[in-house]
Image (cartoon, rainbow, N blue to C red):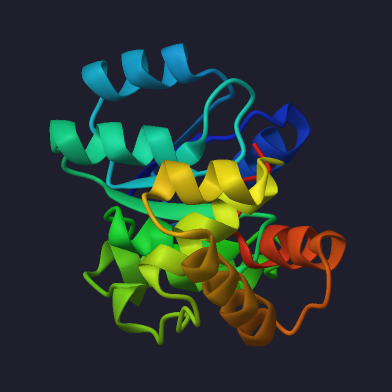
Length: 196
């Protein structure tokens, strides 16, 4: 099995590469920390598995994932991230990742998951996060977090301020928050707001 790792943390990536190379099923494991180098490698070499971090230096791993899906590379993509919130996991799986794994996983379990994915198993059937917000409520939430006034938000979404207040009340109730500071914290925790 041939693996490529894209992670902007060099110590982590080099350590992971060394760990994976100890496994007899892995014939090649390349580590790159720059996106440009990653694209060059996958153009010139073939891989079975790509281990991809979500939070990269200049880009989001989600952007890389979209690009890989559009170009239809033949390898399976496994997200390996320190972010464990369910919205990121759902987004990654929806974009075509074969799995989403926390970096806190132990090495034995990680190797098992990599082998499972290489053998055709996909973690896309795992239970997804059930988003409590409607699409419109998500739009309102994202607008609230930008710091716009309610009047600006209502105008931008082509709704009345009364309808906006109704959406805000629903959002506060569903996320169990009482003010904008709590709302921002909860939105960050759940992945409604990207950290990068």
